[in-house]
Length: 164
Image (cartoon, rainbow, N blue to C red; front, side, top):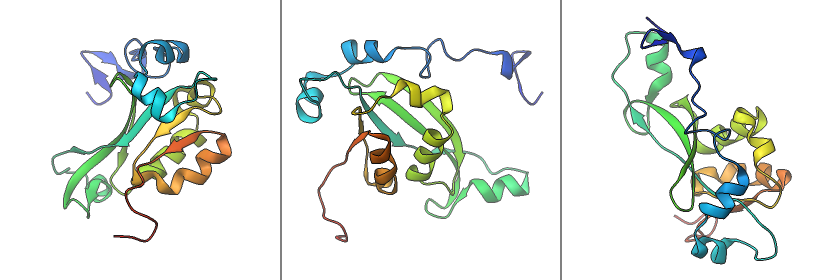
């Protein structure tokens, strides 16, 4: 029953009721799901900006019997098979969307670039110029791309470039 859930074709199930950029408006996120501290630290009082926190995470999986998928899902970094979803939340912790899963060889920056370039879940129309993405160092290869799109990227600056 591949591609089925409870006897229903997965393509027919609507996941937009509680998750995804189609389930909540940008204005609702700004009004109800942005912490005042985040607005003070990252935002601009003159404009209404959506502040989103993005991070790639791991879901460990069992070894696959499919050789090709086993090779794609094995992470040399973690030493076991996994898939990587990209989680997007507001500063209150409210889940906006979970993109993916992606195979193990993709890093956070590659996943974010793919999501934005292919406009998954119509994200490019939801996010506007001057919105803020709070990201970690795993997204450093996406900084130029986000800047071209007009999105402000905020990243912890604990170490300078090249420092370990």
